[in-house]
Image (cartoon, rainbow, N blue to C red):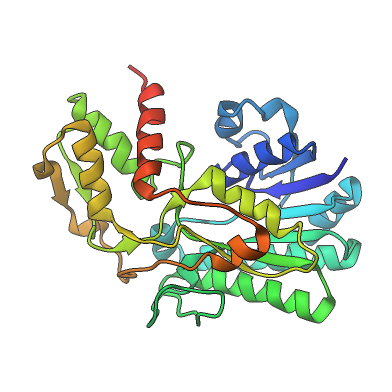
Length: 320
C-alpha cells in the first residue's frame, strides 16, 4: 500500500484529493496546524474523516517536517497548504509571501535530506501569470504576477523547478486555474454568489454586493481537477502542467446565469467599490492540451454545467 502525505488537507482540494487517494487504496496522512483549531467539516462532509491519519506539523519548521517524513516514509507528498486568498494577500503581503514561499522550500529541502525518491506535488496557481500579452496561457507563458499571492506562488513554482533540476527530485507543479465545488469557503466568488443568491430567493438577503464583475476567468470543477494532481505524480518523469477548462467566462455571466436559474432580477446586483482590488487580471484562460495528451486527463465540462451541479448541491444543504 502506498502512503501519501497531504498538506492543506482540510481545504477543498485536500478533502477531494484525500477521497480520491483512499479510493485508490492509499494510506493517507493529513497535515494540520493544530488538533484544537482544525476544521474537519469538509472531510466529514465527504465521510472520510475517520479514514485519515492526522498529524500536527509546522511547515515553517524543517525538523518537524523531517521527523514526519521519517515516521511515515511516504511515496508521495502533495503540498496544498497556502494562504490562498488573493484579496487577503493585499492586506497581509508579508505573511502571505513568507509562508507560501518558505513552506515549499522547507518541504523540498526535507525531501532532499530524508529521501529523494519521495514524489512531490506543488499546487501552483494561474494567478502567477497575471499580466499576459497572449492567450491562452501555456506552460511556456512568461509570468507577470499582479498580487502578493501571485508573487508567493511564482516563488514556490520556481523553487520546485530548481530542486528538480539541481538535486534530481521528482517534483512537479499543477498550475490550476479557478476550480470550484460545494466545499469552497464562503469568501470565494462563486460560492458567495450561489449562497447569497439562494438567500435572496428566500427573502433573507436583499441584494448581492460585488466588485469588478466584468473580468473573465477560466473556471472548472474541483473533484475533476484533483484527478490531474494524482496523475502528475504517476508519470515517468516530473513536469509541470496547466490544469484548466480552456475557456473563460465573465463574473457577470456567472451571476446572471445563477439569477436566471433562481428567478432573481438583475437589479439585485450592487457594485461595491470596497470590493475592487488594487490590480486585477482582465481575462485569463489556459491551454490544457499538454495535460490531456501526456497525463490522459479528461475534462469536458462547461462552467455552466458546473454551476448547475453547485446550485443543486447548495440547495440540498440549505439550513432552514
